[in-house]
Length: 177
Ligand code: ATP
Ligand code: MG
Image 1 (cartoon, rainbow, N blue to C red):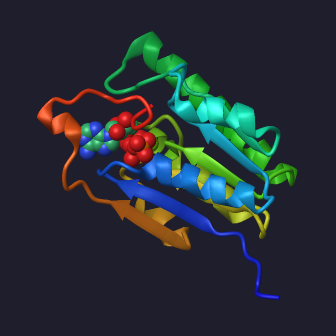
Image 2 (cartoon, rainbow, N blue to C red; image 1 turned 90 degrees about the vertical axis):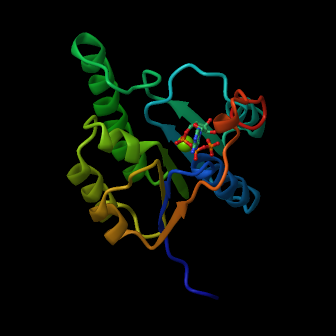
């Protein structure tokens, strides 16, 4: 038998494809009978196609949205809401990572949550250190911090060469959501 090892995988960079590549891994893993959990930081109540796909896939491919929607230069109460949601999301991530219920956990947009100061980078590095050895952990989002890159086994940077937004083409169903 080949060696089995849970990998830390990072999809980062400015180009499109970080979340969808993570979901693709999830699909592949699910097809192999692995149990997959996606915890979405930042993302709130958008109707992404993958949510409906997961509902049809059943109990072994679960997506939970834990964010408060798009965050950028929010301040005051808004910011506090995002902060509280992100802290709760991180706590949920810890619980699920340690639960032994999953073979792959995707922490979607967690890099972005760190970048905006909603989640501490150290707390995530700690999570990588305590994860069960067989669990695959996938972290997505632009601007992954160096400490996480250092700890990861597989890091891919998506590089933008062209994006339809630049031509003013709006988000398309099935492509962006
Ligand atoms: P996807 O979810 O399509 O895999 P992503 O995870 O790589 O994209 P995010 O940083 O999460 O990208 O951004 C979310 C949204 O922003 C997506 O709808 C995506 O198409 C869009 N986006 C990604 N890269 C760019 C870019 N370089 N310019 C404009 N919009 C982008
Ligand atoms: Mg994404």
